[in-house]
Length: 259
Image (cartoon, rainbow, N blue to C red; front, side):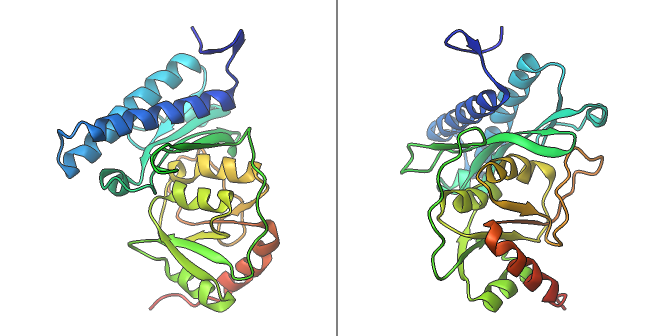
């Protein structure tokens, strides 16, 4: 039986949000057990959330394809129009350290486009948790005079640092890709520029949510993000306010290659 909201079956967007929220709660429960070392906690969290998400999606949407970071890839998905793309724990290190900047991604790509999704931030709001959804866009505050660019807290991308310097943006180190993308959605940052290597599950749900909030989302050369590919490697990403995209893309093109 499919989940119900009142007497109505959940929509795809409602299902994505429900799954992301429940997976986030499961992950917090696993961490709070206090029984696992940091290394074992990351593995246990990934496995627990992945099992829940994959079993639930196969139960609730049996005709759709599925791609998960923690599951062996089934290339039958390439023949399907609708493919769920999930990252059970985006930011395993941050999750294990009980930081706030980790996430759960549940996205749906339709014909290669990140169409809808949800990103759970279980550590947000002092641990109360927050779920950002493509079907419930929030109003965005105006951009500040000095723009803020989120970057990796451990491996800042060469292009991001160079562009930030060129446009006078403040650098804001942060953990997971989902947390960075949602910082732009929430108005806590203005630009997320990544060029250090990612996969489809790192960005599908965040991009769906960002697009629903009217943000620009593309590769760093301005080309579209295309999902459900045989090669799931998607090394770069730009999420920002639409009015800033031409300036940022122009500056990216000017950045010399490192070395």
